[in-house]
Length: 431
Ligand SMILES: NC(=O)C1=CN([C@@H]2O[C@H](COP(=O)(O)OP(=O)(O)OC[C@H]3O[C@@H](n4cnc5c(N)ncnc54)[C@H](O)[C@@H]3O)[C@@H](O)[C@H]2O)C=CC1
Ligand SMILES: O=C(O)[C@H]1O[C@H](OP(=O)(O)OP(=O)(O)OC[C@H]2O[C@@H](n3ccc(=O)[nH]c3=O)[C@H](O)[C@@H]2O)[C@H](O)[C@@H](O)[C@@H]1O
Image (cartoon, rainbow, N blue to C red):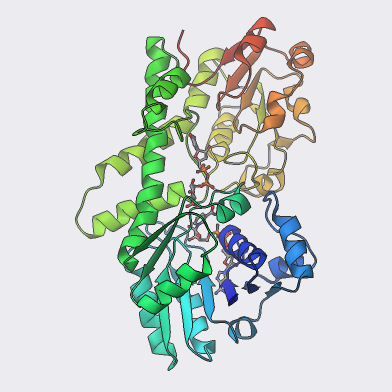
């Protein structure tokens, strides 16, 4: 059992803190955002993550988990300090490390003893060395810096934290590396004990590879549409080869979220800094931007003119089971529809509140999903929430103006919709 503090209570910090407390450690989670901490202290979870609320309740009741804005109090008496602050993109695509620098300085200023500072934030190679420097400048205490990047996915953050495919531990100080290895001793998974620089690089290489895999299958889908093949069958046939694997081969309208877009750009930036032209990842980013707008092209192809057309949008978040709108394809697609003169009605089970802050004010939000389909000239599915599969499409078919469905995620039952007389357009299914 360890005494731990976690700096930053976003998706990663909160999941890390909550899961480490559930493993029996004493954990204090810290954030500079008072509203977040107040919510957490009142048992509310500031993000939508299945299973999180129950674990917070269980572990706060067991007095193993607490939340505070007082970093000094949190760091005192803890031997391990996790850093899980944000690393968003700068204008030029490089990683904005201001939160990391600030957190490292504050940690150093309040250190009262030897500490292990472990970086969970996704940071470019060289950042942990920079953290070591910042801490050295601001304290006389001994410390070790460890890099342990995070691989959880939003929407399954608790499950992924508890069941990681691997735990990467980058260290210089052997004892600190072993302590973090011991912290995770109950995990039945592979451990990668490596250098700090390799650990930093593993995270970017993994995200860039996954993003490239998605862009690759999306391009195969675009070809399939033109040559009369079906992308899911192609993906299945490819995926049976263990070297390829069937994971992350779902064609659609491109990747979004807080990480693939920013981490691919940050890796391209790192490469540029060392005079290397990272062609594969650049191509993946380029294809992804194109892929989002294929929905608009398909709509225009079938409606000819978007002006005064009623478009019903199902799903706004960048993927299901999250309210996260960061880099969601809907943020690119909906403004294009509005620019074309369309009337847009939208529904998402959990992301509408966040969407309102990001989308133009002329989007009309509906309280139930079937409402977006009423008098629609086209229904467009952007996020594959289960509840859209379960919609009563027979009833919907009687209320739409025009039986056209564009399924950007290949979620719906093609045969059923076609039997009901819909023109059903999906991704990568040529005829
Ligand atoms: N969201 C995800 O699924 C994953 C994110 N990551 C990486 O983890 C890092 C964190 O990501 P998220 O949790 O999504 O970020 P987030 O933006 O949701 O949360 C970061 C939190 O840190 C807090 N913070 C900033 N400076 C602080 C300071 N000086 N002291 C205390 N709190 C401070 C902010 O108020 C915010 O609540 C990023 O580097 C990201 O790339 C890695 C794997 C998965
Ligand atoms: O660094 C991060 O933040 C995280 O980024 C992703 O996690 P996340 O962004 O939460 O979500 P994913 O499930 O990976 O989906 C990302 C995007 O790719 C899209 N996607 C995913 C898979 C697929 O086959 N096709 C596809 O279009 C999704 O719709 C979504 O927009 C990675 O999967 C995590 O391992 C990583 O820790």
